[in-house]
Length: 282
Ligand code: CO
Image 1 (spheres, rainbow, N blue to C red):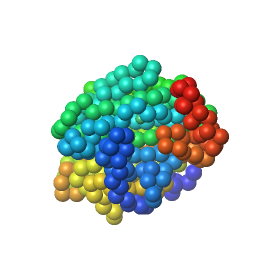
Image 2: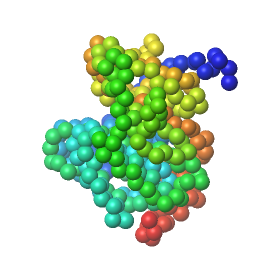
Image 3: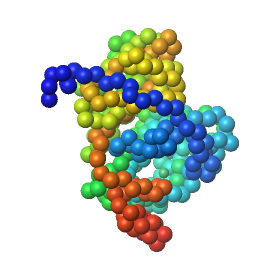
């Protein structure tokens, strides 16, 4: 690798706004990845932001549904969701907590709001699994807010390290082959923050509060900026406080065949997933 490559900073290659969508039992959300124009960003299959103060937008929740072949990552910012699955696992997702669920060969679960009104805000990210891990045993990492490392950087910048490495601080989640970075970065007005990412990883920034600038491109609240390949990325807040997710991961480069909540490598594996689910084998 040349020195030039090592020093190459990442730029914003594309900017897209989230797309209004509805999922579960009528939960209104913004679909950022996993929609026309951005079907996936290998290894990421989906990113949703749910954010509403109106109970009517989320009260239906996400009743029982299956997953196979990937991981779902739920990161709550406000409000509470009750999680339960067909293997007797239950948990409460509260503000600041993260649930990293490796669905593997399959679970059936529900994610239901535990409130009828008031702000409910958070994200769900789907991270693909490599072919060799798609049928692994299901696994949960339910992480309380207090356990997420926070790096305080120059200029009053505060970074929650869900996954990945910031300086010497390692994220709280034990991750697999895709080696994801998942940071929630809070920037005071005018502050900036730089993060080194692995050269070959796909990466994006999603602004959930205020606006950030990367190089000569601005990103507004609700926009995703897909980054060029490279090493370091530098984000700066404009004249107001800003908050953004910085997410990166190693692309798998494998065929993706998706059918709703099943994401496998071949159509035959999808048929098998539907058959197994229908026969109650999850
Ligand atoms: Co789910």
